[in-house]
Image 1: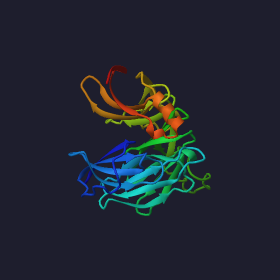
Image 2 (image 1 turned 60 degrees about the horizontal axis):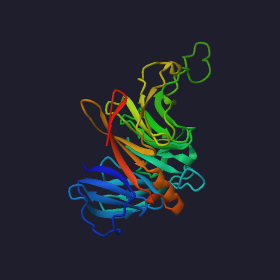
Image 3 (image 1 turned 135 degrees about the vertical axis):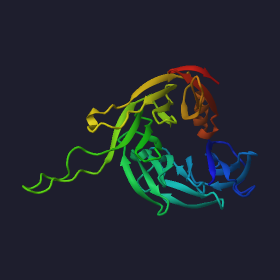
Image 4 (image 1 turned 30 degrees about the horizontal axis):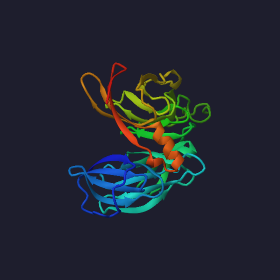
Length: 320
């Protein structure tokens, strides 16, 4: 099994195919928005092993569980110019394969791989779904009803799905719930009672910070931390336990807020847990650089920085 670490980047790493070698068993995938390429990097030497084209406006990348294939979302924004394809990369033979057309599910962005499926968000469609890698067809779609459904996380047991919704400033918690009402009309006299509806996806919404984008789930699955790009906060959401039969009686989740003092934070990932707090990564783009990039017509020219913070008892106790 190959171990793949994914890194999103705007850097240039040289020409495509400049140093093609065998893909290491442990690899680092580096996605360049500016060059529109995916690089395979040897983490031991930090040398580029191979580069492959990924198409227009690549934003996120995910690898399959066996590390043999990668998928990249071709975004194009969440508006009229939204794209609708996933680039497919053969990591073993180091070549680009035919893209997957998502049709009306435009603006694909966040990606995850769970249950043998590629999961994706579709901002312009206010939805998310999954693709079967074998058929390369969309086999599941669910509408969020939220503006700019951006990033997605699917639990390994497929019982919950989490998405952040930028413009709505919310976190969606989806879980399988079996309706209490029986299926079909009342039975005729003497007939057996109707069966139950199958479990279906039910959404709970938690209001987090403005511009909720990147997020991560704690290793124990009990909390979700979101990076809120428009107000410089991290929202900490306590995920409600499953167990109540009546959905209306379930806890909807509670959120707390940690102020970082940083603006435009867009990505978030837990690095490790220490004895005194939670260490987490928090990526941001400076506002001045963002404005300059917009004026120049190249948003990838903006400088990005990565911060590390330590949070203890709901308070920011250090930041690097």
